[in-house]
Image (tube, rainbow, N blue to C red; front, side, top):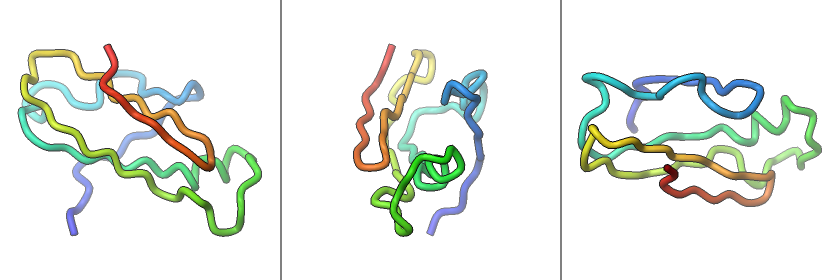
Length: 87
């Protein structure tokens, strides 16, 4: 399988403090981000089952123009998630 190239940790608001990718690493192509939501909810003290319903959530998306702004939010609870290209 693919090995992670970068690892990020969100702030207390669940966001990164700056862009995930910028400059040369930010190029056209296919991306996959894996959000470790099961671990996140467990460390936040949110009651979940011993085996989380959602452990890791992979989001696969494409970048056509790295000159544009891409915002890829993940909205989630221990039982559901949604994503979209934000502004």
